[in-house]
Amino acid sequence: MPNSVNNLVLILILILGVMMTLLIVVGMIYFFSKTKKQKNTEEQIQDTNNKNVKGKITLKEYSTDSIFNFMEFDKIEDNMIVQKGGDRYLMVVECQGINYDLMSGAEKVSVEEGFVQFLNTLTHPVQIYTQTRTINLENSIQTYKNKVKEIEMNYEKQKMKYEQMQNSGRYTKEQLERAYFELTKQKNLCEYGRDIVYSTERMSLNKNVLNKKYYVIIPYYPADLGPNNFDKEEIKNLAFSELYTRAQSIIRTLGVCEVNGRVLSSLELVDLLYVAYNRDDAEAYGVDTAIRAGFDELYSTAPDVLDKKMRLLDEKIERKAVEKANQKIFEVKSEKQKAVEEKEETIDELIDNLAKMIIQENSLLVGRDIAQKAVQKIDEDKENEGGTKDVQEKTKTRKRRTTKTA
Image 1 (cartoon, rainbow, N blue to C red):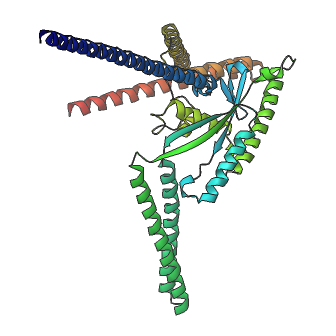
Image 2 (cartoon, helix red, strand yellow):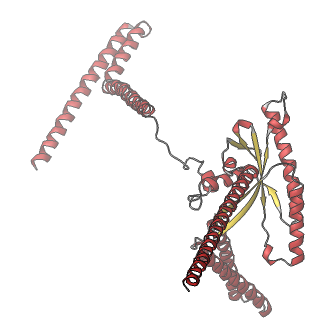
Image 3 (cartoon, rainbow, N blue to C red):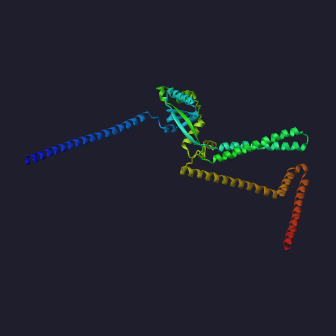
């Protein structure tokens, strides 16, 4: 009996030992499998990240140039933007967008095939630039107002003509009805024009009226010509010819997609860059206003202090010189005026002296006795005139005194 119990205990111990061993083995297998699975997951995540990084590097290698390279420019001439001192020329084609969503399935396929053809025919790099602008209706409103004003003037003339026809009584009923019909038509046209102006003005109050413009930018590098002896003018002409050829080719291929394009002129390029650089101010101060103002209100800079001081000194010198010149002219005029006044005061004496001189010079001709009597006569007349003047002066003085006493 004890032996059987001992055997049973040993068997239970062995069974427990086997079970513990199996549990340890299973636990180790589970631990290793979980660790391996976690490691594989981490490797997969790392591989995914590496792939993303590689994909990013690939996109960066094949990405287009930044649009800011298009914005940096030296000048605009001959419908081209000149960059980097003539090392790069740009021509811009404006494209008219189409409403792709409203097209039928066949039309969409046709547009897609045309765009694929456009991409396949490209033999040079291009940039696609989209510019969103706020629609400025000021010019349209002013145009409408001018047209409505003209219509109103015609209406007033027609009205006066119709009233004259009525008052004259020389026109038949049919002629008056025809004239009234024309007057009514002109009146309706006038009211319709006012409604258009009113609606456009209300629309201009909405600042969210936007318009998108699409551009294809075509570059040209004179370095592609290789070593040459061309001067700047010849290089510019070659750049224009090459860019214009490329632009026309793009316009033709885009025409298959029903997208109309045209080459921007120099003035339109100025407007494009102005809006790109001045998005906030372009609504209130457009490039057309800037051109009319002579571009002198686009910016303001403070002058150098020495230049400012020099200008003030020049103004002071000029002002003092003008004052001095006027003063000396006035002094000379005063001296002349004084001499004239003195001569006017002594005119009688000068006349008498000159008459005496003439008589004395001609005394031999007229005789000495006659000459002396003539001289004495002049002196007597002078004394008489002097006495008369004294009496007149005394009379004037007496009158003045009488007036003051009164």
